[in-house]
Image 1 (cartoon, protein in one colour):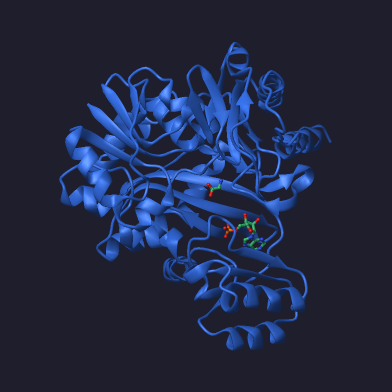
Image 2: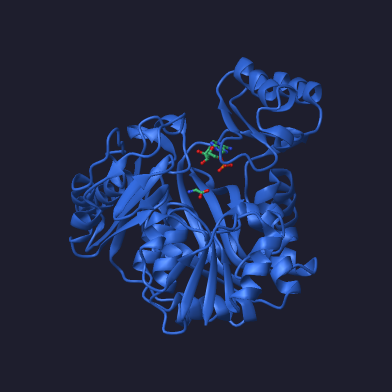
Length: 435
Ligand code: AMP
Ligand code: GLY
C-alpha cells in the first residue's frame, strides 16, 4: 500500500523510517518532507504544504494512498482527518473536534474538568482587564497561556505579579501570538519533573507507549528560552513501564470516554504532557500527535509494524499485543543552528552524518535540512536528531553523543545534558534500594 506522511521535521523522518520497514508499505509520499527523507529508497517528497488540506487530499487521491499519517498539529486542527474521511481515505489522526484538545487550551481544560483528569487550577479570560484583576488577587506564581496554537511559545511562566501582568499585555493587548491570544488561561504554577505519556488510540481503546522525556529549554540545566525540544529519551525512569497502565487510566482513558460520549471518538496519538508533583501527576497539556523529538527515541524502540498498528487503530481494532518495544533505552540529541530559537542562518553544509550512522543502532533523523546534490545543507533551526539505542540509558546516551561528535556544521549547537535527569533518578533509586 502507498502511504502519505504529512510534515517535514525529525518526527516525520522517524515516522517515514519506521513505516518504510513495514512489509505492508509499497511507496511513501511525504508532503513536503526534508533532505533526509529525500535520500531514502521508496520515499518521494512532494512540494505540498503540510497545512494545504485541499492539496493534501488531492495528492492522497492521485497516489492512491491507503493510509495518511499527519505529523504536525496544524493540519489536524484544520481538519485533515475529517477531509480524508470524507474522501474515504484512512487517516491516523483525530478530527477537528478532538484536535481542539491541542488547538485550544481552554477547550482542553474544560474536557479535563468534565472527565475528572487532574490538572493545574485555572481561570479563562477573554478580557485583559479581568485577567489582570484576577492576577492581582492571586498573589502567587502563575503561568499565563495563550489559548490557541503558538508554536510552543504561548506559555509564559511568571514568578511575580508584574511578570504576569506583562504577559497578559504581551498576549492580549500586543497580540504577540495573533488571534491565538484572544483568550488566555491563567494557571497555578506547578513544581515537579515533567514527563510525556503518548498513547495509541482507536476511538475506544488506548495503548500506552513507553514514557519519554523532552528537554524544552535551549541550554543545559533547563536554562534559557523555550524551544521545540532539544532532545529526548525513553523510557523516563520517573514513569516506569509498570506504571503506564495506571497513568493511562488517570489521564487518557477518561478523556477518550468523554470524547466518544460526545460523538467524537479519538483516533491517533493522544499525548499528555505531565508534571509529576508531590501531590501526584497533573496534566499540563494535551497534544494530538507524536511529540518532536520524543517520537525519534520512541520509534527507535518500536519492534512492531507501525503501519499495521496505525491501520488497526483507524479500524477501531487496536490490540496491545501488536505493540512491542525493545527494553533497551533510546536517547535523541538535537543539533541546532547557532541562533535557535532566535534568528539563525541557513545553508551551512553538514558533514559526518554517514560517519555517525556507521555506529551500530544509531540513526540520524533530519529536521531542517535540504539536499543539494550529494551535500546536505542546514535549512532550519532544529537540524538533526542523533538517536541511539543502548542497553541502558547511560550507554544509549554515550552512543548518541559519540554520533554527535562525528557531525560538523559551522555554528552547530546542542545540549550536553540530554538524559542526565533520568540517569540521576536511576542512581537515586539504586542508592535507596541499597539503604
Ligand atoms: P505547555 O505548552 O502547556 O506544555 O507549556 C510549555 C511548558 O511550560 C511546559 O512544558 C512546562 O515546562 C511549562 N508549564 C506549563 N504549564 C505549567 C504549570 N502550570 N506550572 C509550571 N510549569 C508549566
Ligand atoms: N516535544 C514537545 C512537542 O512536540 O510538543
